[in-house]
View 1 (cartoon, helix red, strand yellow):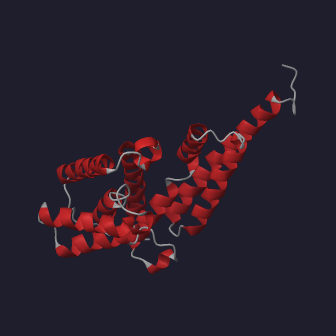
View 2 (tube, rainbow, N blue to C red):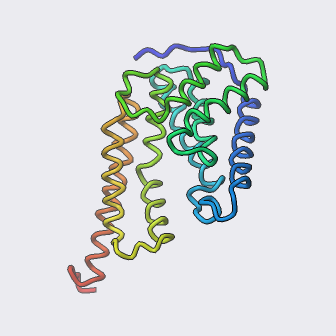
Length: 230
């Protein structure tokens, strides 16, 4: 696929300001949560975790966009704002709410073309789309693929195991949790369309399979199902 070189519309300084705004917006969302709300006790809904996820998605989306010929600035800005409203809106509404936040920011800070603003906001609004990725713009596809990919691989495995410990899921063995990550990864990989995203998914799923094999060997040795004389 040929890659079209486009003039940069967002400077590094502007993008850094956007990153700071998104983190502060997430932190403010937590502060506004009533006492006892989910963000007060569940670290996966903290501003720090959500911002880290967002930055992971930004990196993946930008990588895919560059390889696939999408508008990199539209893609990376949309990725940065895609979950900005995650901690203050219902799950079903957070994409639309995030698009509104993105539009307000882009229209009030800087002189971004309306076409650019519209493309960014459309990608944010559609990033939870569950249909065929061929039905959305290439920039939206890159964002959706990046969002899917961040949930699989070594990072997804580590987070799932941490979540198991945090929630005291003693009814489930570690290898079963890794299987859950693998199953989720396979479902995510089945949705991606671009060659770049497929390659990343393949690499990340391979890591999960390796980890599962190593973990199962050690679990078997520890509980007596397998002995090696040591």
